Image (cartoon, rainbow, N blue to C red):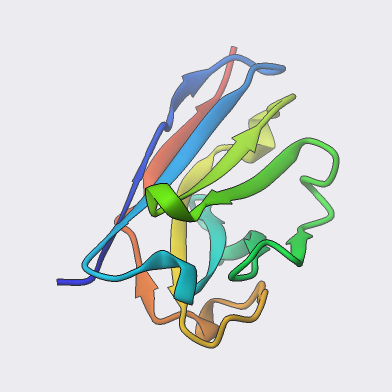
Length: 124
């Protein structure tokens, strides 16, 4: 089966850092653009960042620009989200998703495959 599995979430203090990983199985990740999304309690799912097939284009939500960095290692079939200077407002379940269209989209409807999510909690 085609699967995406997120890992790396957890509890961190404000100002701390986490690196999330999105590992793919059942398909070759370099055929897909990848997006990171998050959903906080009572909020709609929002786009955080995205990256094209060969990393030529990346996009970030205004709320995370300068703090988060998306990258991919196609040889390892993995995409990463490095999160620095974390704030309580970053608390959410984080999801990665893949689209065979290969575009860098911040809209959930563009994506075909989704991971199960990983919880990130930023609290003192």
